[in-house]
Amino acid sequence: MISSPSLAASRSPLRVQAISAQWIASALALTAVVWLASLAGLLAVAKRVHDDIPVLLAVKLPLLQSRPELIFGGESRTVYQVDASLAAQLIGKPTGAAVNIAYDAGEPLALLAAMRRDPEKFKQAHVVVSVAPFLFNEGVKSASVYPQDVVARLGVAEQMKTFLPLRVGTLIRFIREAFAARLAADQRIADAGAMPAGQGLKAIERTQPADQWPADIGSHAHYANWDLSGPKARFETAALCDMVPLVRKLTVVVPPWAPRYDRARDPTWRDKDDAYAALMIDAGRRCGFDVLNIQGIPGLEQADYADEMHVNASGVPIYTRYLVSRLKR
Image (cartoon, rainbow, N blue to C red; front, side):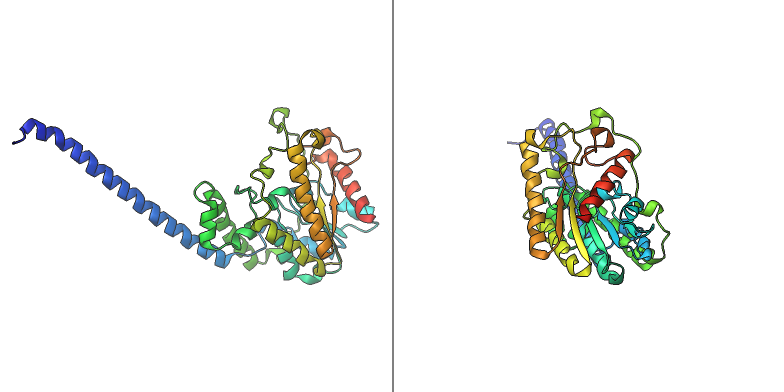
């Protein structure tokens, strides 16, 4: 039976649409393959140029020129909470005897790299390192806090498997920071850079609006998909252990959260926080460093907090005085 011209005409657009869909699908597949190959190539180059000392730490390292006796390092709760000048006064030493080289999302691996790069500036110092749960919780993969030195220790295939497709931003940040860290190393920023103000302290002047505070800490992003069995915990804990023979004394600090949150009423938070503190305590016993698990500070009130994790300017001297008093014991 011969098809009528009208029936053939009706089939033609359908055929064209099917062919077009196949070409579009093929083009998209080819684009994805090329994009993945390009990303893999960039990651391979980034791994080669990566330097364990990130720019944010490198710019703080000129503070070590004073050969301090007390070095505060770690993540943001040291950056914004420890007044090194006040700490020097409290131990009866001149300005420069204590410095704050912490940086946002600062990880132990980076601090260890700085110690190995210039051991003479650390070997006579008491080093105090603050840690946060996101540094050890494998469930947190967001670009802003994922430890970049941990990413560098993963193979390219493992990097892509871990972060694609939803966390591609973490890989993009790694590539960007790898080249920035290499440039900082080549320019000798750690040695010849400008001296940071305030011995490294950056105080937070304003307090977060009440409607922006988390309802609880148990569901906080730092504790999401809780897992202490991955490479984060393995590499970062090992870094803390490797610091011990490189310094006069090492103290690891687990800082408190804002007093508005109650561990007794938030068992999810309590259990997860206890697990990460226990990880530190166990490592300290094995490797020979002290651990200060601070769950509250007398005199540090809710009004002294800028957000759920960080004190504001009014809380800095209270936090610093308490921390130094604990270090003296």
